[in-house]
Length: 89
Image 1 (cartoon, helix red, strand yellow):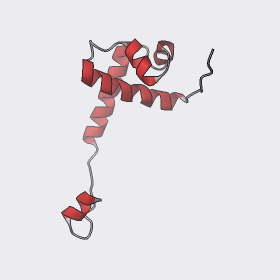
Image 2 (tube, rainbow, N blue to C red):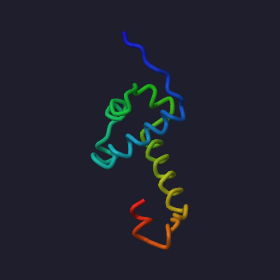
Image 3 (tube, rainbow, N blue to C red):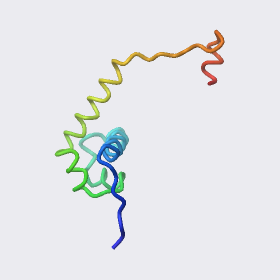
């Protein structure tokens, strides 16, 4: 039996959301299973369900993050008065 490294819950939560985002984009919500999600994250389904009680809760958490990201204004500092230099950086 292999040993597993304990991952902090906050880190694991982000891993789950990142993986869910990718899988939902590729297979859709209905086409994604929690087993696929666990395999992509590299953990068991039980760990996923300790953090999120349902697949719907994962989707809702993603949706909340997207909503929050959408309301935060993006700011970009123009370097040396040049849009090109800013984009290059």
